[in-house]
Length: 475
Image (cartoon, rainbow, N blue to C red; front, side):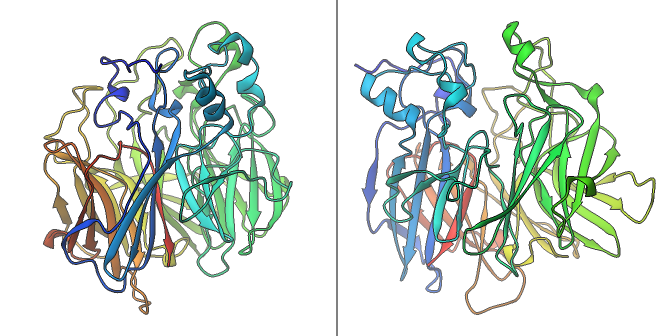
């Protein structure tokens, strides 16, 4: 019999806590009008812990669940499914949690080696549609394939035996060629000091892999591609097996290690072509976009002064950390190039997006999740839930924002309007979870007129737990 979840761990309670059901809900109630030309599927991935966890539960270790809104002819259907990973299957049969994916030394004795040999992971972080496959990523393991309509689990995907590493949760797709670029950190083994870059053509065939030694063992969540470069940021969330075996945190913030950017030409297959550029201390989980012109690389991301959610090596908190949209500049024409940065926006922001047709290119429009500061998180009184959606115009001065009130918003996803090549013309989609009704709704906006409010609200009778990332598959 399943045991109740902890009522003291914030990650196991609203708005993060799991829902213990899978369902199909057709023809959802729509307030307003779904745009007639919006056709496709919005996917949301996140942790949804199946059974009461082992040890001190963290959001990153929850069992993966995918939620989908299928939109066509003004109607919206919804379904959700747990990803049937190896861990999920073992625990489903046992009716209890057997494995702690973030601590290999805290597992049922029969599964003491599981974390070191598992090929599925938790599949709980992000999704991507590419090469005719819907892949769910968690970044510590290979991707996991699910059916794009039913969400039924298909299995771990290794690109026909060519992928021998994990896959980042943030692959990048070139809008002109369809090539997908991704990486794996700690590529040659647990806590190793390296990354592996991979390139996959538009048909889903892995064509190139490049092994790159790094200055130290680091967790790398996101990266950037431009027309001519790939940029992998090595920032000091360090990994240490020795520290973990001594009872310390496996991953910790060590600012003395510094920030190092590994930059390699897009057309290179040689690690010898990597150039390492340093910059002042900072941390960025997610990047909005990047581009280059005349040897100068420009990168926009939501930057912290220090990493949140991770402890110092001695287990202490790193303190309050707020992200703001910040622009990095790297002049590759200089022999002594050093990256510089400047905050370009006044509002706290995370989960940035751009029009995917302008990814890796010079661009104007970006979107993100933000906060008005009114909705306090139980995790820390200095943290505020993101309840605002924002549009940032890199060429304008006016800020376009919509406040969703006492709620938490998901990462906004931009969907181009069919038949238009105009940057920013399209729709912005976000799952909004109300603190008053404890239910979730899909909000659909005109992406360039956020302040006008949603053109449609698509209502669920349950909530989608606050998770991580989403993606769009065009119908």
